[in-house]
Structures are given as structure tokens and as C-alpha cells.
Image (cartoon, rainbow, N blue to C red; front, side):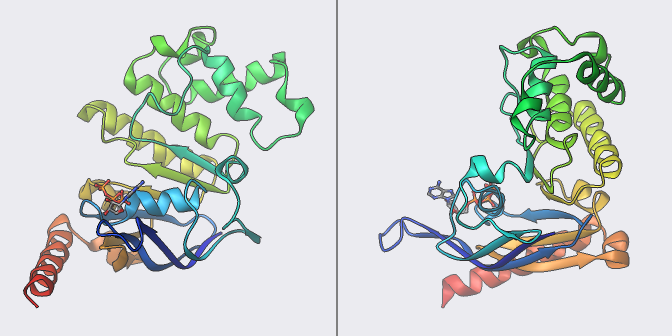
Length: 261
Ligand SMILES: Nc1ncnc2c1ncn2[C@@H]1O[C@H](COP(=O)(O)OP(=O)(O)OP(=O)(O)O)[C@@H](O)[C@H]1O
């Protein structure tokens, strides 16, 4: 379970450059909820993920993961609960490490020290099995440096690393946006599989409205630091990209009115 209560984040407060990135945002994800987040540029989507991941501290409000208040915890502590995949396929993996070294690092996240160390035979067998599920042949390339993999392969590996140690929350930050259409489709399919397989609770930012409708059981639209529109259940299943465009159009009218007053 993830809960944000009245979270506020302001950049450059009390200066001419002040930006209210999150304006008293409250959001609750129940176990296994998969929420897609859409919104225009600067709406506050990345800030929302960064607050959950502990990269930024809110100026007000709280963040809870399960029964733990993580509001004031630094990102390396919050990493115990959170798996994250970034837009840049190069961001989630270490290029100078082999596939198995990268997986080993991710595997030991949140585990006791003894388990962190060596690459045992048993661990390798687990890695092989997990890689097989990606159907990219990476199970035969355990000793290859990650820097030699393609962008799509690296993003598939990042996704596996973010998910297979069963994080309490999975954060997806436009994680298919930098890939060509066929690779984006592959990663989208792998995401659905991983979320099902590891029974994850997921928050995904995307600019792709069709993807936001296709994935997950809930959708939120953000604008100017607020959640302005939500869909869930049957309403989300039946919604079309045109419906979302209509909601965006309403926001534009609102923004134009605000500018005029
Ligand atoms: N590190 C930062 N320093 C200063 N201002 C920031 C910082 N991060 C975000 N902002 C500002 O906060 C607001 C929200 O930004 P954010 O990146 O969360 O939006 P977004 O919805 O993710 O946008 P995009 O779709 O363009 O990535 C914007 O006005 C942005 O300029």
C-alpha cells in the first residue's frame, strides 16, 4: 500500500522562479493497484515519483509505504521498498558490470548482508530462469557486460532488476518513451507480465494515452501540481484516447481563463 497525504513540493520558494510542483496531492494505492499517470509538461508527474522514491522531501504532507512513514527517509533507505525504471535505458543498469553482476546487486536489495555477497550456483539458476521469461536470450549472456546490450535489452534487464526482488512499490517513469515502437511494445508486454507475476503495486508515468488506458486498473491526470481527473474500473476500461483528449481540452480552457483573470 502506498499513501500520499496532502503532499506539497515547491521549488525555489519565495523567489520569482517559484514553482509549485505538487499542490497538496493525496493519493492512495491499495495492494496490487496499477495506476497510470498522465499530464502535460510540468504537471508534476516526475516530482510525484521522486517524492515516493525519497529523492525529494515534501515541504508538507506525508508518504507512507505499508505501515512505514517514509516521508523523511533518504532515497537509499526507501530503495528497500521501491523498484524504479527510468526513461533512459542506460540509467537503471551499470554498463561495466556483467548481466549477472547487475542482477546480483538488484537481488540483494533489502536482503541481509550475508546474502549480498557471492554469486552462488543457486543464484545463477534463479537469474537464468528469470531471464528466460524475457525471451531475449539473455539467459545465455550472464557474463556479458551490460554496456554491450541494445537499449531494448537493457531496458528489459532494468525492468527485471526493478521487479524480481518484489518491491512494495514499482515506479515506472516513462520507461518506454525512449524506445522504438517495437521495443516499446516489447517492454510494455514485459511490464504487464512482471506486474502480474510478482503481484506488484505500480505507479507509471506515461505520455502515451493509449498505453495509459491499456495498462493498469486506475488512471490519474495531473495538471499544475494537482490530480484533476481520475478513472478506474469499468470507466477506465471503456474510456478512449478521445475521452482523455477532451479532458485535456477542458484544462486548456481552464488555464486560458485563469490567464485572462
Ligand atoms: N529539480 C527541480 N528544480 C526546480 N524546479 C523543478 C525541479 N523539478 C521539477 N521542477 C519544476 O516543477 C514543476 C513540475 O515538474 P515535473 O518534472 O514534476 O513535471 P512533469 O509532469 O514530470 O513534466 P514532464 O512531462 O515535462 O516531464 C515544473 O514547473 C518544473 O519546472
